[in-house]
Length: 84
Ligand SMILES: [Zn+2]
View 1 (tube, rainbow, N blue to C red):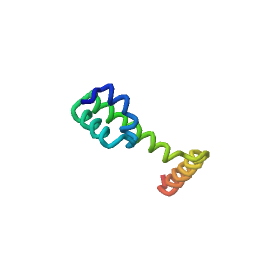
View 2 (cartoon, rainbow, N blue to C red):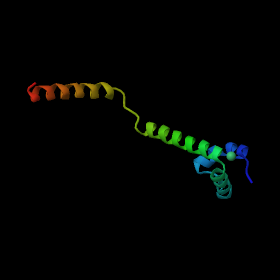
View 3 (tube, helix red, strand yellow):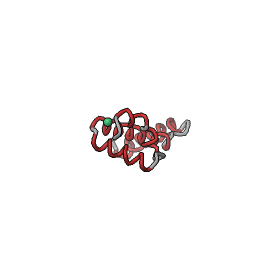
View 4 (tube, rainbow, N blue to C red):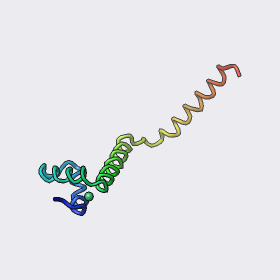
């Protein structure tokens, strides 16, 4: 039976999908039975997903000001066409 300490020391391997299948099964079983570790794994997984998502959508330099200018033009055009 694994302990919380075991899980924490294997957390990276567990989340990386590089753990030995047998070890992974043991870790998963511990997570299912241990609310503390479940929270740790769940939170870490979500954090990793957000982090990876941010990397995938990395904003190219200069695009922010271009988007802002396009928005300003659109807002100005909307105002003009609304007749207000
Ligand atoms: Zn635990």
